[in-house]
Image 1 (cartoon, helix red, strand yellow):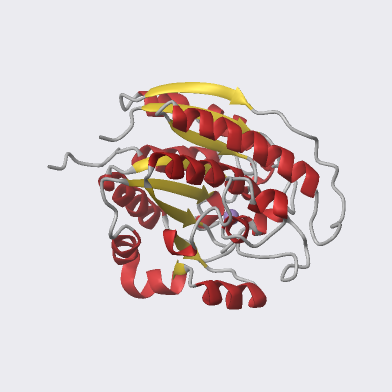
Image 2 (spheres, protein in one colour):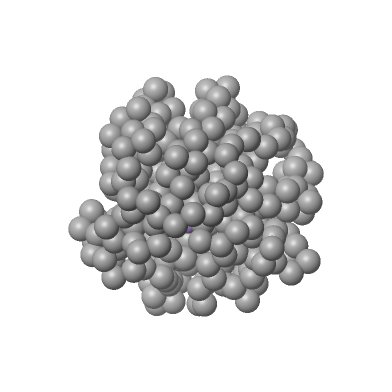
Length: 305
Ligand SMILES: [Mn+2]
């Protein structure tokens, strides 16, 4: 019963990032053929174009946050656009844009699940936990804080966006591929009990076991949201991101991760974030992201029963 109607929503901004360029991510994914690739799988794809929002003023933090007003405006636009597609029973794909927009996206998903009486599972594929707060991070870049905000820790305008505080319970989240967490952030992740399958776990137990655990206990009433930060991938294969961290999943591990998500048939919304064409080589990271998204929607090497 997986959803066959897809809506692409571009969010061309780097308002929450520490490097410029993720604002060009949506167009790079289009150039890499995301719409045609999904259509070739029999999906009906509507490209809604790009959202609009404030320019990036590139200022230092104020009260612990960089660009909070602009970040709020962009996230509200993302929230409203995602919610409209969800209410129309379509599967929205957010083309980022930096990962601060995961806040608006998942706030909409959480609101939708509340309205429909559905359970929510969030898979956060990332090199980073994105669980910082203004007290814990010196940079003030909001792309390091969306998961904390969703769990009720952050500036009021962001924390309240879903219409309930907190928007989600940390128990609904599974983080995969994590390998860079600030010391204070590490303590906070433990304190709230976030379930993290970090690279050490994947090295020791394999991607297969990590995904089996991350996808356990999904049922027919569960909405599965995937928030895919492209820096999840090893920088050797995915150089086009602002915050590369060595030692990420290989091509095959990433494919297996996506294929196992596809096998659940529960995927109902997706973010593709932090792609930075200014740092990419001939669009190879965008092409890789599209290749992996194809697997997420059911491409497999051989026919399987
Ligand atoms: Mn991230």
